[in-house]
Length: 304
Image (cartoon, rainbow, N blue to C red; front, side, top):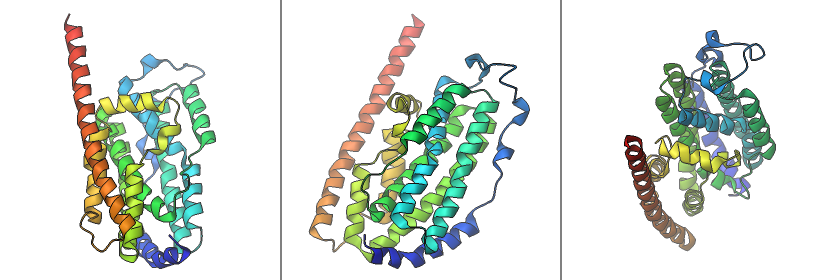
């Protein structure tokens, strides 16, 4: 993706920024926190029995929060790819300001409700932010494809966590966060649409690469693999959801398999993507079967 293409996309950025500002709703993070439940940690030290949430719910909220905590890295990455001039810079500033509310209100909720050890949570935040997030050598076009996927995945993870937690306050809070993420996804998805019109072969290559190599930005979280399996078993975010609710809807929206007139490398990447999707679907089915078998074995053991 050349500087010229970034310049060609600038009017689209400005148009979608105007649409975003017209649709976005201002909201106050402090209004989504049950402050009346707060107690002084010096007078009443934290204990795991103080939380009303299940271990799975606490793990999901922890991963959601620590992922949001890494905002400084995300800002750096997209600013490096798109620059801080013109409409691009205005969007990046607005996006960063909106994203900053997410960690703020989720952390306040977790601390006030004593869902997690505050000392351990802060130690993990320090580790995650120090490690940072690096997207490697992504081109700007690859970054647009990646953030479209990631914003949708994050929206679904937040929304499903809110429903799973079984606390109406958390559900309302995470629904509000998910609404932000959805608007962010629509913004980036629209830029990919425009890129497909400007340079379809380059855009298809970028989309295929990012779908095939996709990984959530939370991989830098300590013990992320173990925690992601807990989240997957709970049905909050797993391979089945990733395939059916993230990848397939975006590819359908972009009409990726219907596009014609692509160059040879783009056609090859599209063929590679088709094979990847078949493998991903099979992996998802096997994961679901494994979780079902493990749950059945656990129930039998509990009845003995």
